[in-house]
Image 1: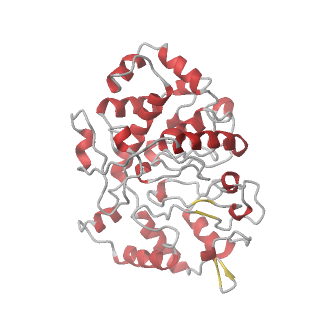
Image 2: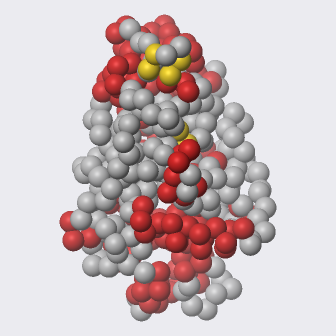
Image 3: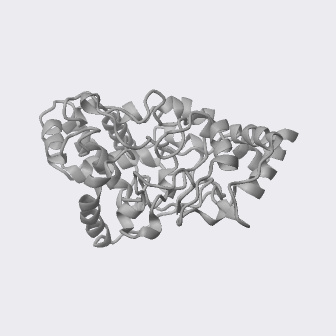
Length: 355
């Protein structure tokens, strides 16, 4: 849902949102907690940040996470009333069982059975990111849902109409009052804050790889070999604890760009065909792959990188070295890489009943 925006509709909204964001004074609150804090009876929830994760990018001090706010956000996330015809919820395109991606459609399907133009990405570890959508068209988590709600091929609504609908219900007014006691009526900023509170706590940090980092277990010899191959041949782009350098790169999918990607935001040809480098956490669950979902398996993805990369002026330099396109990988290396990538699956995350 959130990243299947129609590019032609994004740019005006992006400029408006950028003005709002730049005019706001934001702070960053760094907090740590135990993984079970979100399932306790506490009124205030702490945002889990493992010590090997990047710092929290969201200004938590401006939107403290509470039990009531989180549960309200969860209800909104799963409510089709946010769409024009009351048929599409955020969770239609971001399914928990597959790390909040869409396993059924490529691209995902919105109101009136319309297909979007981009693949629905994973929603996880959003608190540690500062740019969103495949082209980075949003720089604050609160505004990410706006692009799905107001996209004519996704949810097809307006914020104003959504708020009118929520205010007319019996269930939402008391829930908003409980989450935000100072308000007397439901407004869009508080709806977006509630959705952010829910998404902020979707932290995936307990895969087999994480357990090995914490010294709780060891990877098998083949998984460790895959990690070594990954560090030598993939980690320039998929780096750090989130397995992304947060950059926007052209990974050689095309030489002519039907979707211009990052260039739609930067308005420069230097960004043609560049898209956000996705996190590889839970990657075995999040097929299809790439911004347009063209690959169904990890084998196809790795085959692309070793023999399918297409040249273009904006191609990532990591994919064109010494005049050679792609990444040199043997069949054995591909097999071991996939074994390592499987260790990034966080089964606790996708089965957590709190989410």
